[in-house]
Amino acid sequence: MKGTAYCVGVGPGDPELMTLKAVRLIKENDVIAVPGREARDSVAYKIAAQSVPELADKELVPVDMPMIKDRDRLKEEHRKAAELLKKYLDQGKNVVYLTLGDPTVYCTFSYLQHILEAEGYPVVLISGVPSFCAAAARLNLPLTEWDETLRVVPALHQIGGSLDVEGTYVLMKSASHMKEVKELIRSSGREAAAVLNCGMEGELVCRSLDEIPDDAGYYSLIISKQP
Image (cartoon, rainbow, N blue to C red; front, side, top):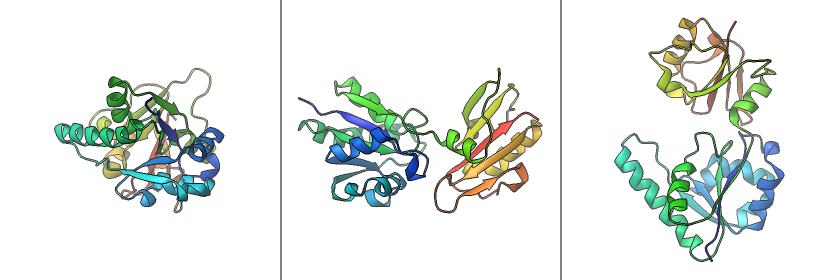
């Protein structure tokens, strides 16, 4: 029988936000896949290891998922990653793949999931606390109230447009273009707050647009509400 590939969300950064189910699956399985070239350098690994010390004794499988825009090369890299996991699944071993936040929100494992499921391998997603929910809680800011809508968007694809739909915007993947994203928000007449490195070392809470640094790092999330 083929093993099952589990994609386990470890939450946004604070190890206390890991779910009991995530902890149990890591403890119960021997093969742990971690995104990155060096498993122990992965942020997901470092989060999980704080709640599950047994993780250090597991068989760690680094899965290189490069951040590139060449679609053909991306498909090739995803195929290689899927083949790596299949080596264990074909032995009847379960593989627990660790991912930041929740596996249903902009998760690179999704590409591997499509490949594995198409070839008959069982895949199970284990929900984790999404980064935007943790950031909103850190800000003591309700994401939605009454009839407000919530839009979660990759900020890069909004540049040059407008944030003209009523409700709350969550702007993700904005770090490399933070200056342009801030201008987009400002020109839309919206308010904004952000959390950088939510729940991690070096966390920074920004309660206004002007407080958000232009050189914000990768783990930056903006919440923009109407005045």
